[in-house]
Amino acid sequence: MEAALKNVEIDTRKELTDDDVVKILRSELKKRQEAIELYQKGGRQDLVDKETYEASLIEHYLPAQMSREDIGKVVDQVTSQLDENANFGLVMQAVMKELAGKADGKVVNEVVREKLG
Image 1: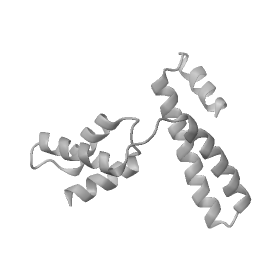
Image 2 (image 1 turned 180 degrees about the horizontal axis):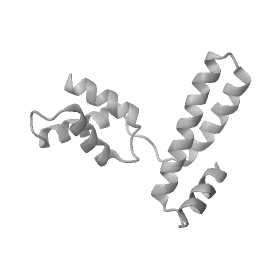
Image 3 (image 1 turned 90 degrees about the horizontal axis):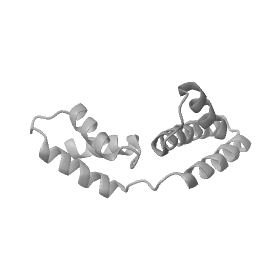
C-alpha cells in the first residue's frame, strides 16, 4: 500500500493531496476485492484470507461510504435537476461528480439503474 502511494508520488513528481491518497487507496482496495473473487473461484482460501486481511486494513483508512438510501436521495435530486429526457450516462456523470469519493461507483451504477428503471 505504501509502495503504491510512493510510486504515484514519484511518477507525478508532486506531493499527494488527501484526495489523491483516497483515490489510490480505493484503487488498491478494488484490486484486493477482485483478487478475492478470483482466488475464491480458484479454491485458494489461503490467498483469500491474505487479500481479505489487506482489504480490511485499507478500508480502515478510507472514509465511510454512503448507504444505498443516501445515494438514492442524491440520484433523485440530480435527476430532478436534469432534463426529463436525461439518459443513464448523463445521470451517472452528474451523480458521480456529486459523490466523488463518498460512494462506490458500482453501487451508484446499480442505484441509478434502479431509479431510471
